[in-house]
Image 1 (tube, helix red, strand yellow):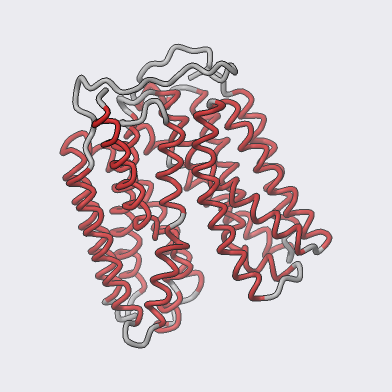
Image 2 (cartoon, helix red, strand yellow):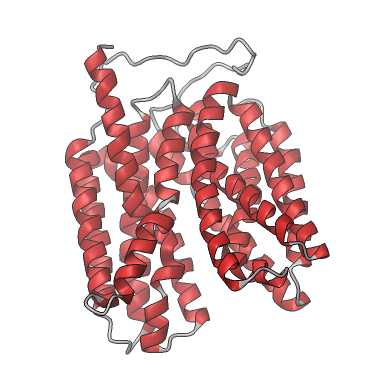
Length: 406
């Protein structure tokens, strides 16, 4: 491979990170929903349902993106993703509050579907250039997606509160920016040309390479493998820890004695650790291999649930801070592991569709987060949810240890 092509792939990675930095605003719903609740009086349950719908269509969009990229190519797929996302935010900016169902269609369906398509196509296209650095590439892309709520979300929040802008214009501007950036990514990003020789993964002297013959699996072959479902459920359990904590991080901090200002800051710290966890996991994946990385991520998840549970039981703010930081790293490791695991175990030829199937673990993790919230409501405290999360992360370790061959 020429040095020019080596440089081009890093340009593609940078473009992918930038595009996902804007697309990741899907996780900024806790910031974007505030003016809708204030202006239209929509309840917390109604707005929570919108986020659930958004995540469902985000996952479906990933599958649609996998199908479309094979039929019409990555350029047309990303342009379509940009149009859907832009239209979703434009329509949301023009809501009059008469029906919350219109919010579900504009933001939940259109924006969720468009961002899901973009997420899959960008990750699949850029990953194809890095067979030798699957973890690093996945980690960098996931970091951009995870950092969006902190970077783009906070910027939009400032604009929404500015008297000369307001939330409607902020939503319109965000939609326009998202549409332009995704379309530009469509014109820039492309798959490696046929016959191009890319660097191959190097064997690790430390024994991190695994004892199986790598080959490309079709989606049908992948889902018939019991190993896939063990890894899938394992990642669902691990992601449930972060999903749950993110939903009530501020209130959790206050419950153990943190001041309101510190509690708000800790939400941002959790987001930063989430982004750092994504890129750190990718680097570790390339250095130590799939098995050690997944076991390390599992150990971090157990520590996150355990430390946070202890902080709740004894009312310790320092332990809560440590627990939230570790939780951020733990949650950040999950999407990177999902991407790198699918690529390492099931090959690159069908990666786009295979990854979209694995990405449905987000829905499972969201469901478990809902169960944890119900436990909090029924028990009146945070101890019961964290006992459940600790049990789940322990069960994940049992599944993790059994994942050895495709």
